[in-house]
Length: 135
Image (tube, rainbow, N blue to C red; front, side):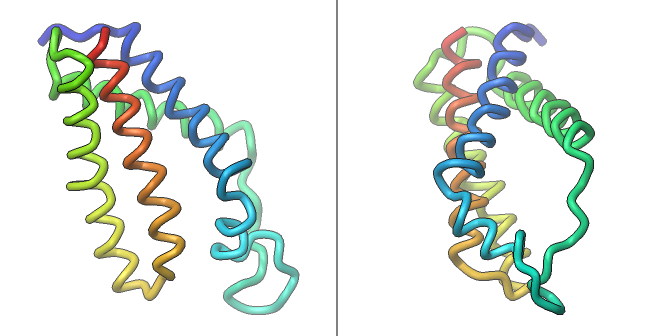
């Protein structure tokens, strides 16, 4: 198995920064409202304990490295940008978004929250596939 480790690292970095943009700028307010972040009420919608930011960022990046490495393993070397994009979209839509949908249905989570979270993963896997395939 021939893996371009630079492509894996760049794909993981892209996922890391896309997550920052997605959840901080693009969907910050609706996402926070849907998960109850920042609310001061009682019960289910109240704010939960915020995790340690440093640990959260490090763990997030490690998990994104694993995702990128797995995608690179599936693509192999020399796949090309188009194939990488296509595989990333298929994984994002066909596996991640649908798996989220099953969980969200049983948990009674709102469709809007699924669209935000699943949409992020579809975009991330597409970008990761594009980067890995192109390199």
